[in-house]
Structures are given as structure tokens and as C-alpha cells.
Image (cartoon, rainbow, N blue to C red; front, side, top):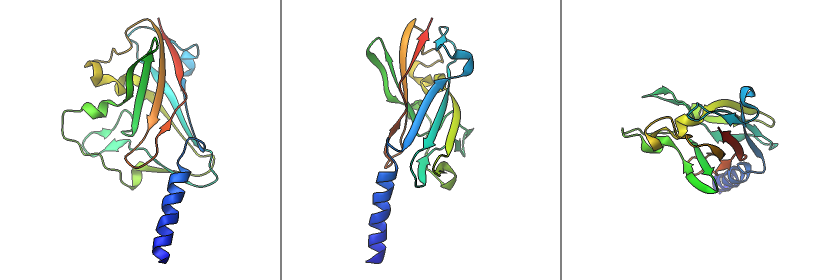
Amino acid sequence: MKTLLTLILLIIFHLNAFSEKNISFKISPLKSYLNKTYKINSIIKLRCVITNLNKKVVIIPFKENDIYHGKLPYPTSMSITVKYRNSKLLDDYSSYACWNQLTIFQLDHNDKKQLKYGDKITRIIQLNHIVGCKTKNDNFFNKKGYYFIQLHISWRNFKKISSNILRININ
């Protein structure tokens, strides 16, 4: 009975601890692009900062290494939504979904980042890698205009965390 109660409390804690309210996920351009203007077909890199605002320890699924591929260009738990001129080009998309080889992504203890209150994970993410296989090349952002970018982190039974929406200009 005590084990069952502990398990129920752990599940409730896990579901409550991992929500939008207590995790801050901010994306921003690098300092050299503070005006958020990029050239057509340029490589777009963004700073991603995930911060625990909860008083409790939070576990984030953040797989950055793979035994077959080594260091990955972005975590397998990350996906992107892209809007252009009020139409969605991609919705919660990740190029890992279209790898043509058999790759089994499993989280091990190194892939679960424990964040105490105020702890941060900061990474530089190249957007062209996330959308890469959608167009079979790195030139996804090839039209002039404003794009709206939002990144997400999710993994099977973890709740999804979404970043702020960032407007960038391709000129």
C-alpha cells in the first residue's frame, strides 16, 4: 500500500512539475542578429534557454548524443513550428522523424537533465538542421518575408514545453 501511494504521489508530482507555468523556454537570435533580419538561404542560429522556475527539481528529456551518430545537432526531443504569412509551413516538426535509417532513440540517465530552481540549459540551435530533410537541403528559409518560429520539447509521456514565438525577417 505504501509503495502504491508513493508511486501515485510520484506520478502526480511528475505531471505537475513539468508544465508551462514553471518552465521558461525562451528563444532569441544571436547577438549579431538582434534586429532579427537574415539573408535568404542563410544559416539561422538561435539561442535557446530553458529555466526551471519551480521550487522543485524538474527533469527535462534532452537527448543530445546517440551511440550511432555521436553529438547530435539538436536534441531529439526538440521540434519546430514555422509560420509564414499566416500559414503553417511546419507544425511540431523534427527532421529526426524522416531519417531513413533505423535509429532507436531511448533516453538513458544522461539524457534526462535535472534542473533545480533557477538552473538553466542554454544551447545554440541551427534551425536549418531541424527542418533539413523537409526540403532535402538546408535552404528552407528561402522566401523574403516574416517567419514565426516556435520550438517545442516533448518526449513520449512528458508534457510538451513550447518556447516563445519569435518573428524573424528574411530579406
